[in-house]
Image (cartoon, rainbow, N blue to C red; front, top):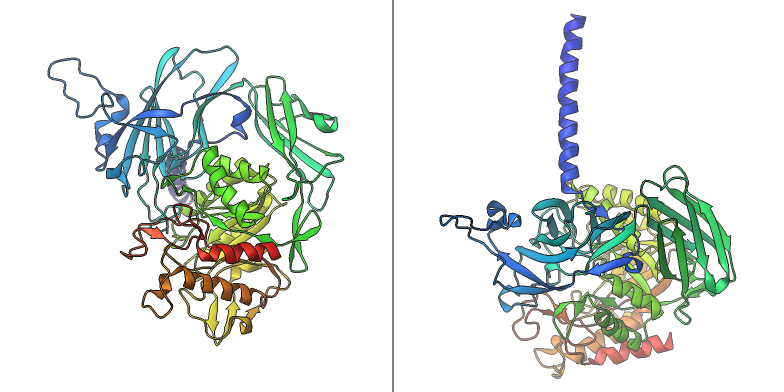
Length: 605
């Protein structure tokens, strides 16, 4: 009997082992893109931006036809019902929706093709780097699949060392921006779902052992001690000599990596701290035997205490504005440095010292340019409403996107907040446990920045605003989206509004407020259309600003939003026409009356 039981257990155990292996292989196949190296911009790189040949594939027939093989007729009876030759092209980086009228609202598959020349070099490694592809990407090199990536707003890479041919090579990327029930974001969101290869593509060349990751930041609680961590990748990663230099300060530190390729060191120096008034950045150089990286890095501290946000041990009021990654004049996904300067320049003109980049990680140009311009940054994951937290694949997707966002932006001192969710609902199954776990993971990855979760589940009755959500117990700030005066009518005088919160002395940030107005719509209040006028939007702002004085521990405000932007769910045929009209500026850059109200408020603050 004992032998029979043992034999039965062994058979079950074997089945479990087989299942585990199959599951591992499935997960590996779904997520085999590598997390991108830190700061590829200072490497030896060759841009693949420009025109790419495309095939639009609304029925996903190309998967069955195996488009990536690029079959060519060899006999008279060979007929292949696809071709990149003599077909359309699209610009990369760029969304396909704004480049072709017939694709304005398209959500589905587009195949991209790019050819490039390469000559192999001894003792060099080669990577194919993507700044972002929305939403799913399957990548092929010379007819062979490199792998896949899911997530529309974070970078990824594939190593192609030894896979490229001397001479002509071909990259094919299957992009698919179709919404997914278990995606991040999921089926519903309030912006145009720009698809395609929306950010830069580069070939990045490194030495055999290269600097995969590095972090330089002030030690938590300190204004002069820097923590530096470096991670090498390659056959000489262990016991390798590493040098960190900050020439302007005559700092030079030498360290040796451990058996895993990791090294760390702490050092002090006479740093001028980064701030909105003086956005000081230092050139930092990191070198190992076969690789070197340079970056412009600033040093500052950020923390919360006594109901305030403290920058460099001084209280700071966050004068912000929400921004979507859209060039309003082009109606296209923002990607270039010029796009970043356009959007951030308008925020500076408004008087901001802070921008919330909603509702996903924006491109690298936005993050770096904001830092140079002295704008603190709120960096956000696309965990936005209606997320299916009960789906078994969702926690891994959240963790991957968090890792990719933090690895790319952790050296940007302008980034002061990691925002992990927006307008999720406590009643959603597994929402609290999933986001609490993600918060813990975020703090492990970076204990020096603030963590936020944004909610809109507050209760407003009898002129009392009652804010209560479990996530605030784990966040550093209480971030509230409220639209009193637009979605919710005032229930008394704004100045008499009472705020009921039970989160100790955590600072409060009004992360969204406002209302819609079509620029030039200036009907009198008695008119039936008054609620869409600039005057009514102006009144919402004056009432909101009056209410702000009654909010305990108010540490910042962030109106929704800077520019009117495309959103297919905005259906009013007269005032919206497919645009969210809550902008302080129209999509043509015209200043609405509320702009002046907000600018004067920031001047006073």
